[in-house]
Image (cartoon, rainbow, N blue to C red; front, side, top):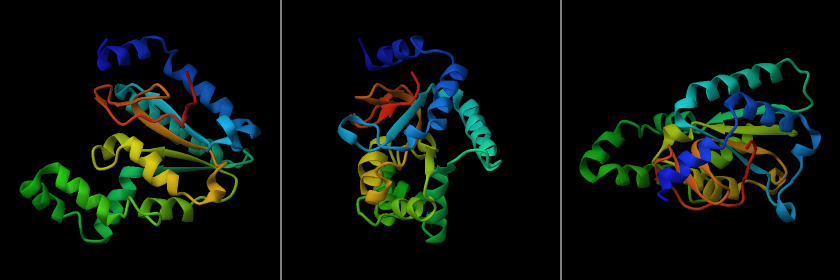
Length: 209
């Protein structure tokens, strides 16, 4: 069976998006969710994968979660980071955004990807995204990461786990971090947009079946 066929089969077995939202919402409310719950007390990483055509519904639900949390009834703070917006804002600040077109003309998108990741120090422990998330996440928070689809191929989901979250300070080990992923995650394989197989990853858990 091809990767695309596997992805289609994966989605056929799913419940509706609203049912999966409900499952995720119930987990978020549970105090035990804000503790490391992975195998052997692993990091508290989660993935909410969804069909790419459901993007606007997912964005609306994230906004609804934020609005509910701002009312102050929850015993935790919900923090949302759009990875694409963070990257673009930093490139604008550094005056680098205008240079990307010329870089792409000379060397293609791969040259742009390398230059952007070098500018953001993505492979370093003090990389920009690590610092930003660390500086803007209060104690007792749940972190939602969105915008990874818009980032592709500047930043891919496995890089978020292996180069960004891997370098988060130790105090974040029990902080739940949920990546919203437009594609399929099988807890072994990431297929962005249900078309492109990214590197394997198995340390995160699907938050809704």
